[in-house]
Length: 135
Image 1 (tube, rainbow, N blue to C red):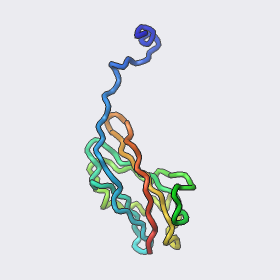
Image 2: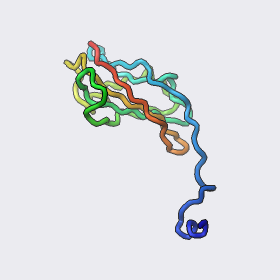
Image 3: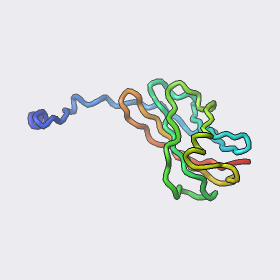
Image 4: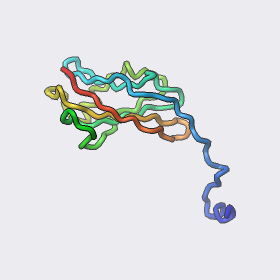
């Protein structure tokens, strides 16, 4: 069997990359506030771990109370290792992807986040949560 794999150019299990241990994280206290304007989507712990990037996806504003997003997630940002996610205002990125947040107070935005190993390119499990746009 291994001879056939070698001839076909299929890597052997012994040559596979070692699994990556992902640091635990949860969604932080998120906020979208048009009057400031601010859009922050932090994680806890706040600093993106060494050798990882934080990938953030968001939906357009939706009716509050929805249990699942009815629109697709769009890539909002990739934050690299060492960045304090509490200090990154992504309002311009959000407006570029989904349009103005003015007049959207009370609407809900779904946020999906996962870590990506910069060594192996393996993603962690995604965290999906939502935030209400506040005045």
